[in-house]
Length: 229
Image (cartoon, rainbow, N blue to C red; front, side, top):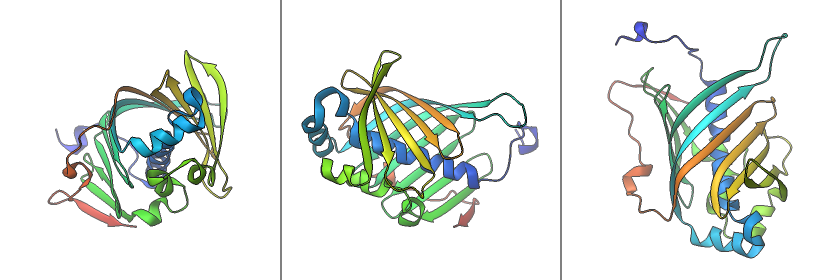
């Protein structure tokens, strides 16, 4: 199908890139905080040291606050994510549009298959205003608490929740709720400074999965438009 035959959507990517970056940050918070509510601080630190990789499927619903009397808008997407300490992760959005985000430890890549466009940024620059780089390799609980306040939140939807708030006030991430079913990561609820909420639900979570090195490598497809930021 030609591009003209596809459903139209906005062409600009700054907000979309920021949203995906915030989601990436939230995932890395979850990677660090998975056992906080279930087994306490010692279990949290044990998980941070012992869980070096992971993979899962996800469904994401983004809700934008209403404007000018209109109802709130929602967008639903789904895909897979994988991570490997330190500082490597891969998101693949499969529906409704194909997008891939790869952090290889040095560069953050965002590939939009529909537009055949790649956005390339230095990973330290892209995630430097957030604790994502630290959280990907945080060695212990004290390192995590240096940048976030963590507290137990009320049970909801059959899950136990941990609330994480960044201590830095100059970022766009306001808070993240991390949900657990027993000791299994099950959900993220992300709130940004614009009032936009992203609800992510995980299935098939695998900790310490064997992930090929190529998982966290990216090469722009031939003919793709590469934009460096």
